Amino acid sequence: MKTLHLSIMVGVAITMMITFTYVILTASHSNGPTGAVSPQMNNTTNISTVIIPNGSEDQNSGKNYEPQLLVVVLGVNNTVRWINEALVGNTIAPDTPVTQGGKRFGGYLMAPGKSFNFTFTKVGDFGYHSEPHPWLRGWVLVLPQSNENLTQTVVLNDTYIPSPCEMFAVPCP
Image (cartoon, rainbow, N blue to C red; front, side, top):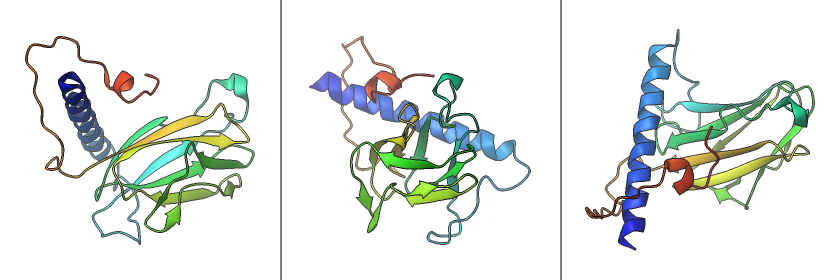
């Protein structure tokens, strides 16, 4: 049990470091803001974007959501916009039903060039796929803005620490 707590803490810490590095790198390499301001959230909150790429409707193309694993932080960038750049309609379908903030995640058909927004309000990992293209799979990992409520257990004599992909049961790129 102690190993599990340590594994979770290490995984969350690594994921948070990766997220903040990504946010800093994205901000430093863009010509403008890192995302549009969501009208439903405060003015400092950015929208995170997932692209459904052109060609992904062909299972043999090897194309998938970009990014396939998106890490967001509550109150920072927890509104996610999926943009359909494919030549056919796509539906974002959660692997398990999700309702947050009074709204249901996914379930409506996006025509080519259209988008869908959802604001995550709870910490967790949320898998989703496309209908009618089930080979398109993605995950949103929602982290807390602060780590005050995280369990902090340290075990010094264990040597095995799983990778974040193994810990969150997602395929590594």
